[in-house]
Length: 360
Ligand code: YNC
Ligand code: MG
Image (cartoon, rainbow, N blue to C red; front, side, top):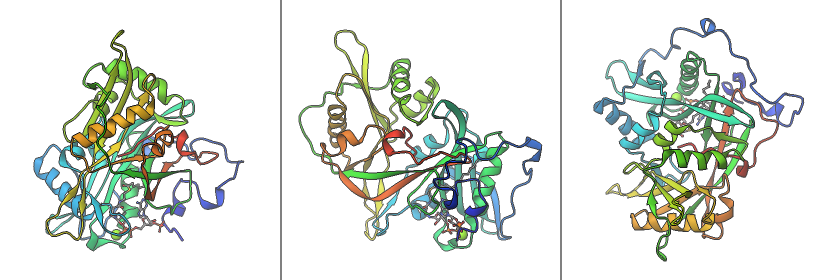
């Protein structure tokens, strides 16, 4: 049924619930000299490129491919419209590899027709931190679908990841076809309402060490979560215009930072609409509450988002989010998002509340 996936080191349907398989990496690293040194072959009309996202032209091409061909909802009403600024941010975390920003072009016309990316991330699974690749932005032009380009692209990104001596990966998918070590998350959606004044006081611009400590303390309670150092916090969680917003609560007496919340900006194009209008959506990112109750913190985030003209605020039911979704009148989404670990076997699929990872 899955000619490609049956050959890959992800959990197979037949292994589900097989508790005799030990938890951990399924395949051991091989010496780097045994990793294939040349790129995989593409069908003859196409060629690989490594995308230099520092080039404005390249960035425009990637933006155009994704804005016309990337993820849509089942009814084709919306399509993600990641901004160029967002793509640049998402692809340049500390320690990123340019070789993991992979494009496929038509040799003759040079047109970009497919894309896949990885970025490195330290991810803790129970007690062990692994450097993994977070795989994202897999996209094949609509006119080239069902030609099995995807398996070649996945093999090529895998090869380039392994060449950096990295052997695990994390990714999400909106459909549940692969039945492996997975998470299920209900997407929830809420139209924000305006309300009383926000209590969230400060932009999270400063105090990277304090935010890092807060996050570390919180994320350690979860089974799978990123292991952010201060450079990661600076990159992922400091406010960045039209990309990520973050807020802190500081104690007026001690000036101690007690709470933190953040969301990222990911608009969607509204399809079948002549004037290509967009839905301005905020997505809950990482939130930590120690003094301000999480409900209050998130209520304030909704107010801030509303003030900043967001049309909708989305959140997954990961981490402690379940504790505010109902009360704050989030509406369950119609899709499910599944999280996968590649080349890592978990004894049991995690509950969403055990997952501390938000992929973009
Ligand atoms: C998908 N989303 O099952 P089998 S999410 C993984 N993730 O293989 P073809 C996928 N596999 O079942 P098409 C997949 N979609 O026969 C399809 N597949 O074994 C598998 N959509 O290939 C599928 N972006 O090229 C089948 O399919 C085989 O032309 C069929 O292209 C698919 O970024 C796609 O949703 C998704 O652009 C590119 O439909 C296309 O239909 C498209 O004939 C809109 O492929 C955009 C979209 C997906 C967003 C994302 C995460 C991707 C993760 C990939 C897996 C990474 C594994 C780890 C690698 C590193 C390991 C290390 C170390
Ligand atoms: Mg194809």
